[in-house]
Image 1 (cartoon, one colour):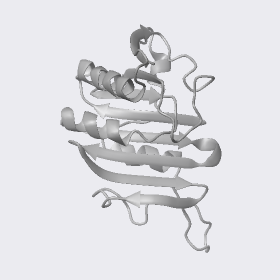
Image 2 (tube, rainbow, N blue to C red; image 1 turned 120 degrees about the vertical axis):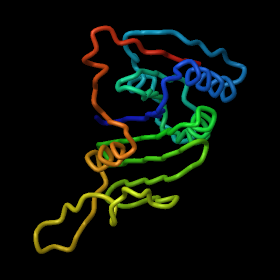
Image 3 (cartoon, rainbow, N blue to C red; image 1 turned 90 degrees about the horizontal axis):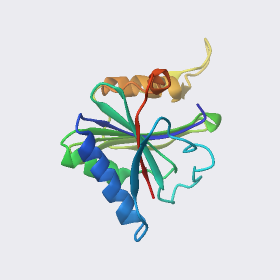
Length: 193
């Protein structure tokens, strides 16, 4: 993995999730047309279609179910979609988890929402905590992360792919399983502007 931008929603209500994504895309790209299709892959979302920006609205969303009761929505920009996560979690009275990762620079961003309420945001990049918003969730260790210092050295806590996966598992979400690659006939729902 090098770049990953995903919104994970705990629900079985696919139609409601797709409708929220369509509405969000339409509002943020007015007057452009939003098209929803199905495909066997998400195409070049992380390739030539990716917008390397934290301010640009995504123009493509790709939704799939890789585990029971969870939808994964990949999107093609680094913009934190807090408004969309808040709306979806509120309207569906569920949990939404935003995950952005860039393993090359060891940059990881997590935001957790429940029933329209922001619970927690944590961001770690290049060996430093950039953000910790909201109260720590009950399962969080103190300090947060994995101690990677050697024996006899001062503790140094790193928050990368392994601690991110463990954190999400406490929420019932299994990250980066790549099960879509193993599906015989994966069906992606693509929402594109």
